[in-house]
Image (cartoon, rainbow, N blue to C red; front, side):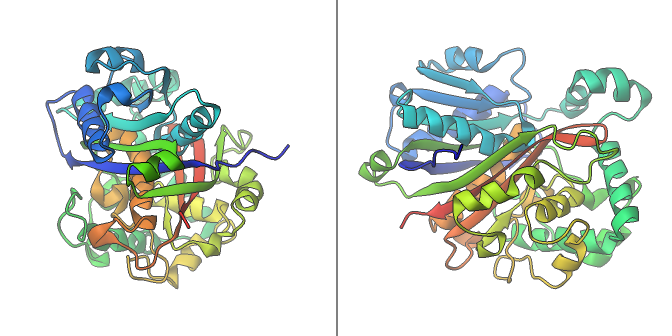
Length: 388
């Protein structure tokens, strides 16, 4: 059965609360700040918000229920997204259907996390039952060791080199230098990338995201309502979501995108090479390579060759992670799963400012999340378009 399109529903009022390396504020504070700014853009009062979708790792012991009490909200539709780096797209999928069904008129999709001294280590120690029982007690806790395993296998299987990963990191840093909100402020050369200290072989310093505090948000509402409020908005032409794909693979070299790619582009009525920009989830370079392959830009293992001939900078022939991506902007916990999507909304509505891709009308956004040892479990993607 063909899925119903997202007709009549738009994404609008994207906000990135500027990230901080460390913060003593709670996740609630970061989420509240994002909500305040998005509602201000929409000229709405908190009482007018009747839908809320929340993604966060550091709200504990609160859930979305505790958050609405804390913030004095009273939504008639509430969701909590637990898909990590895939959360931006999965939040939209649920919110859009709620608006289409009339269960909510306006849904705020927000993700935010704090980052206190040592809070990242504490989160990793209890990240999942798998981590608590099978990896962290043996010194392999956290993403660096997991992604080192994936990266090493990828390099040995497909012949990719550190130089190949480095070109992506260098291009994204160049983009980040045009983004005043990016945590990384210094230029990065390929020579500096290759000379960086090893963290978990073959993962070196500039292959790793920097944990930060911050928040991302966008609003989902009917197109007519957004127009009446004078808001610039974007439509979602297609989305996919898949969890625990290819579970029989000995080690993950492909994700859920490869399962649903044909349906994804058929629903959007376009193909991968029709995009004006691409935003991949980039906690480590190898995952961006995997997404480009599984989303049809090249054959499996071909991302290195594909990217060698392309310019990933904002004004290049293949604009990629135009804000700088997590590798240069920072990873604000679950908000990392929103970073590419909020940037894409700004891009296709002409509001990206210093990172604007000239003439951008269509963007691909993909997400990847919840890694357990040798694989990430959640994947999602969306095609975002300017309203005609």
